[in-house]
Structures are given as C-alpha cells and as structure tokens.
Amino acid sequence: MSLVENGAPGADALLDEVYGARPPAPRVGITGPPGAGKSTLVAEMALLLRRQGRRLGVIAVDPTSPYTGGAILGDRVRMSELSTDPGVFIRSMATRGSLGGLAARTEELCELLSAWGSDLTLIETVGVGQSELDVAQAADTTVVVLTPESGDAIQSLKAGLMEIADIFVVNKADHAGADQLAAGIRSALGLRAPAAWRPPIVKTIATERQGIEELNEAIEKHRAHLGDPGVSEGLRREKIRARLKNAVRERLLEGAWERKGLGALLDRAADQVLHGTISPYRAARDLIERMTDHGERSPN
Ligand SMILES: Nc1nc2c(ncn2[C@@H]2O[C@H](COP(=O)(O)OP(=O)(O)OP(=O)(O)O)[C@@H](O)[C@H]2O)c(=O)[nH]1
Ligand SMILES: [Mg+2]
Image (cartoon, rainbow, N blue to C red; front, side, top):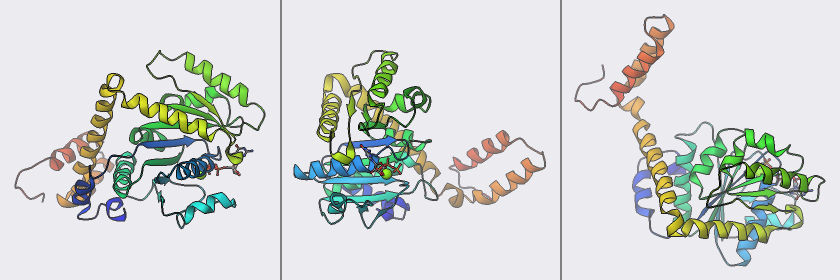
C-alpha cells in the first residue's frame, strides 16, 4: 500500500498483478459532517459483518481523530475489538502532501484490499470539501450521514451531499429533531428528477447499535440494484469510464515535471508571468505542449 500510495517504481506492475485476482470488493463511502458518527457507524458495520464471517477493509481519509495501530480510536470496548481482528484491515490516507488525485489513490487502495480478500471496503471521509466528491467517485455506494444538529437538509443540499447520496443515514436519532431532518431530506429528494434508485433514509443510533442492520440491508439493496444488468450496465460503464479517465490523468502527470525537465521551464514561465511578458494561459499551453511532446528533443 505504501508503494502504491507513494507511486514507487513497481507500483503499477503490482496493481496489474492483483487486478482481477479476486472479485472486487464492493466499495462503500461513508461521508458526512465532522462528528456525525461516521467512525462509530463504521465500527458497528465492521462488527456486524465480522459476525457474518466477512472480511473487510476500512480506509479512513484524513481522519480527524486518529486511527491508531489499525484501531478506530475510541474508548469503547467493541471498537478496540476490531484492532486485533485479522479479518479487518484499517488504513488511513492523507489528502495532503501525497502524490496523485484522491479518487485514483482511493481506487488503488481498494484494489489492494480486494486482493487481500476484503468482502467489503468502507471508506470514511469528512464531507466538508472536495474529498467526499472524490470518494463518491471511487465508491460504488455512497452513504451520507447527517444528524439533527448538523443543520437542516437544505444546507446539505448546498454542500453537494444530496447529489452524491445513494443512502441517507440520520444518525443520533436519540437527539431531538431526527424526524424533522428525515422529513427535510425526503422533501428535498422529492425535488429531484425521478430515477431508478430512490435513496432510502435510515435512522440510526450508532452508539446504541441501533439501525445498523437496516443500514447494512440498504447497502445490500443498492448493491443488488447496481448488479442488475438491465438497470446498470450503462451506469457501471460510466463509472469505469470515469475511473479510466482518472487513471490516465494520474499517469500523464506522474513524473512528467521531472522527466521532461519541465521544472526549469515552469520556473521560467513563472518569471515571465510575474513580469507580465506572457499570460498564465499562454504559459500553461506551452507547458502542456512540452509535456505531451513525444519528440526526441531534449527539453533544454
Ligand atoms: N448521542 C449519540 N452520540 C453518538 C451517536 N453516534 C456517535 N455518537 C457520538 O458522536 C461523537 C462523534 O462520533 P464519531 O463516530 O467519532 O464521528 P465521526 O463522524 O467519525 O467524526 P469525525 O471523523 O471526527 O468527523 C462521539 O462522541 C460518538 O460517541 C449516536 O447515535 N447518538
Ligand atoms: Mg471519524
């Protein structure tokens, strides 16, 4: 995983080799505002699946509370249960300071987890920016977790969470306002164009292990929907298309700055833009030209 995350030599060969070695594990993205209860839900989902004898991978994207030593940090006994369970593989991934686009890297880690033998991969990410959109792209099913205190459904609509949700979870249903939130989501969903899949709304109290089975059922139903060839071949092709596009973009850029000596050209272009000699757009076009130039000429 580190090799792949760092884009080390041999990483691509490794990915080629593991691809298709085992059936791909379904990928479920769990996103929502900070503190919504995503990690608690992930831990409870993990425990449920383990009881069913299934193996699972967990990817925590930029966790705000650390997942240490493979454990989902929590004072609760049942969470530390997972840290010593060889049937659970937990991996944290930073969005900053590492190579490549988030969606592509998430997909690569998912491939490795499938090869390890994951039956299901859960990807937790905080839905406050761009990262949840990337994760939604990498996931087969996206679960959006909201809570009565996370503000009204309209706000979530603005944040783009409404568009990416395949399933809504109203967590902290022990708090006042859970029914109003569910009603708000329902009416917001009613405004959307009718589609083959209507996102269900599942109420949970993660800390009391309530609603976890319903959530798991909703995820399975969505998977069945995706697996239905009549409904979804176009959809799956669309996903694969997006994944390929991503992979191509990643690989085009990978090492291009160093390989073609573009770093020096970038410095020069920056100077020219700084002094107003050329526009940044012109500079970008020139750089792209050099980047995609397959000729034998040396860059200098
Ligand atoms: N009352 C109540 N508290 C909950 C529930 N689910 C989670 N919590 C609590 O909410 C807090 C945040 O839970 P986490 O699971 O860490 O939430 P998170 O969404 O993973 O948080 P970040 O990863 O930091 O964004 C913890 O103190 C949990 O114990 C719930 O259903 N009801
Ligand atoms: Mg968390």
